[in-house]
Length: 495
Image (cartoon, rainbow, N blue to C red):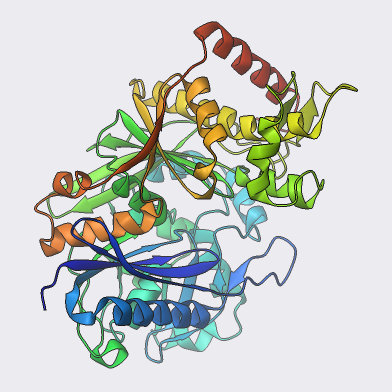
């Protein structure tokens, strides 16, 4: 049987997915399994690593059975990035639950480090903020608080890694303990310029370097699947963080094109080439690496995107389903001056104000639910404009078009608003599972299914392009109104 397919294992925050693509990027088979979210205390978010593994394996087995094991040339892994697991390498048993990227339990530890003046060095070396979002303080917390960790540490058997490392370890039967630079660069322990663990950072966060995985190029040999798992050895030829995989899946290989993922939050990422671009308001990160070198990206994370629509549904009861919001927003010609700043959990990039609080402005007796629904869609677009403009300032290059993915990108009205407010084309791909597609592309190029990434990207198909229809003066007034509203929601604690 011809090996004409590649399998992407997409390890998400609420569930895992396996997708098999052929050379023409047709989906041959797929499987999805959810796993439980654990909230042991307010602000804490955990996963059971064994449930992550069990659901990932079940997805892999389902997809391979449907596609045919003999057709799959390689596997690519992509994952929720900052979530960490600490386990015993001799028994392959976790020492504690995985601490998820959303978890805020180490906020005080980060605050204490900032007060000691550590943030400037951390920012310079990693391109990131000193924030509990990232992995380092999560690993240290497990080392300090798990009752089972001390004997494992004494025996030299403890290892720590992001979810890609955990699943790679299990897939290879404990033969490979590795990660890639796109994931390592999200830990606060990796030098952005050297794409390697940094001894001074490891010392600062109290994470022994010998606990950490080997860093291999994103598109390279990560071993083979243990034959007792699926009855066949399949090469694992790529590992990448989810947002970086999405950028690759969107063909984002040049600085003129960026991608935005419209999910619970909004994740804008653009390619910056062979050198990192540091910004005070955005994150610098490693996009991916190949045996020929490292490439970088700049990223802006917005806390509340589609979550604002969920709040309209669950908190205010303005819509019955999230899908209904487009029709409700279309029931009015415009927002009638209503502006919504969705700082429901603070504001992310480019404001970084955790104490900001949400607000509606411009309400009158004539305000209808359609105006509020439309204002919620506009809020997603306005926040994206803020991050795009900051990205353009940091890179010194204007964005020529925006590629989109994520659940909310199916909303035509949202994407037309986005094109209008940015003044550039917004393109929606035919395949919206771009995270899985990117992992497949990285592995497929390494396996020889495509001769290079341009050949892979040439197979992508466009669903629809949204062209701007708003005049420059209208755009300027709308963005001005938005920024006036944002200024009134910012906290007095913001630096």
